[in-house]
Image (cartoon, rainbow, N blue to C red; front, side, top):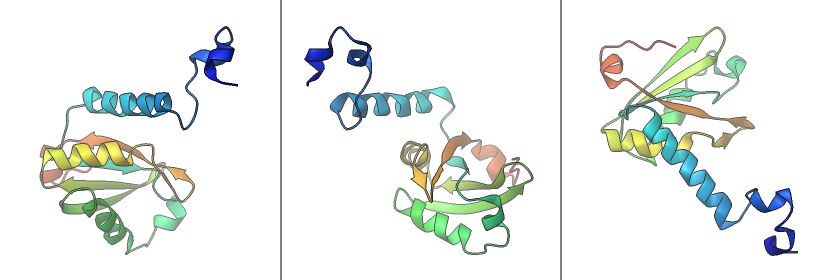
Length: 133
């Protein structure tokens, strides 16, 4: 049955996975992210890897850089460990547009059974070496 046959039910107002409406809702959510915070060429990634997996993983920065380079040119990747959040990864792109593209592509994406959280981080603080987790 199509959406018109359920017009009187509560299902009519809910987006259905795989439809144009679901894609629109997802796009609108991503655009809200861009408006919510000041855009930056630096993004902060959390929940990318399990904290126990990140400890001592020297290849993680290279893997993140390689993946992010597919989105936009990257200046550097910095990984900090946090007792509660585990690995907090800062990716500094060459320009603000790169940070915006990365935020839209990475936030909410699933990787290794984990939902990545991405947010803008101050490029001024990153350039000064201040990577507060």
